[in-house]
Length: 245
Image 1: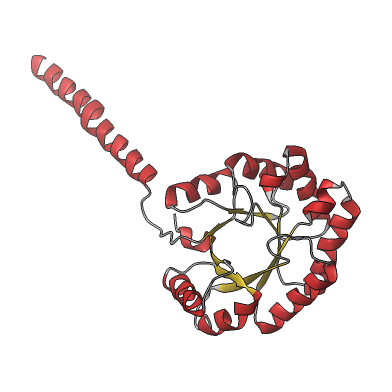
Image 2 (image 1 turned 30 degrees about the horizontal axis):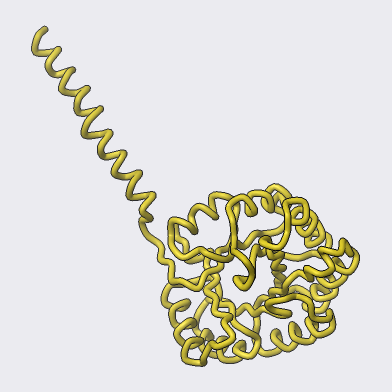
């Protein structure tokens, strides 16, 4: 599998330097990743570095808490698009969600989506802060708000993606929006497990290259062992039987 088209190469640490953004973009270009995700202040630099690349520039707004006002999120999103962002991701307002103020959750997301128009919108639901029913409800609200992608985690909370949560999200969305698994995905084997579970995109800060995973290598070894032992054994028995005849 060509994993590169699934990868959002991300660097959102508050201490991120310009040199690190340059390295991030160079790696994304070299490995043909789908996008880079950077803080909005670095959007102009990332866009400039990726002018000759197919990699898109994504930025996170209202990050990592999601508790900022809707108007501040809209302003940050519109400015990021003006600076060259191809995708916007925002964090779900967890305070509203925990309060069961679902109208405000919906309005927060839908207002941002209307403001950015056709630009794809990801919503980070921060699964580590929600129970199963809340994850399902958050996904339903995101669908009503016309979000394009549901992302599992910011990477700044208690934990990141889980296969169980991705399966719950997949069952809820039923292909009406895409899924991005984020948090703790740092090698090809783990990435493939999330794709198998239903993820359309993989968010990572580690370089993941296409090629044979250890799972594929194990399967290949099992296949070869089967050929050498079972089939060859059967062939030898057949030859022996023919000789006796």
